[in-house]
Image (tube, rainbow, N blue to C red):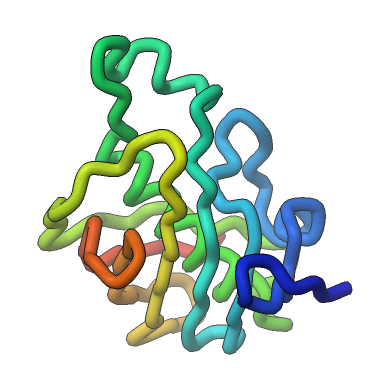
Amino acid sequence: MSAVKGGAKVILNREQIKEIIPHRDPFLLIDEVVEIEEGKRIVAMKYVREDEYYFQGHFPQEKVMPGVLIIESLAQAGAVAILSMKEHRGKIAYFGGIKNAKFRQKVVPGDTLRLEVVLDRIRAKAGNGKATAYLGDKIACQCEILFAIG
């Protein structure tokens, strides 16, 4: 079922995402998928809410989404693209590594992160991709993610 939200067509909602990846609240960090080419690329959205659990301690005086959770959001988006492939359905994508991570914008409650992952190489049990999180047209975070499929 598709819906239109904020001008983008929703391809997968949270319930459909949970059918693909094993993450659950409070650690499911993507809200919807708006574009997907299985095994090639994905665009997902994360709506950063004031009531997110991590804002209680990071930082109470100035709420900022932790960089590691921005990278985890990107990884979960990439996992949806990989695990949507027929040959990988029902499996789990694990972090294999992170390279060249750079944080360029602060992410705060009320922000919408657009998570874009382009998969470079997927083998039977591993692969890598380029991941970018955007706030509007500005880059919030860039990195290369490496993963293992198990």
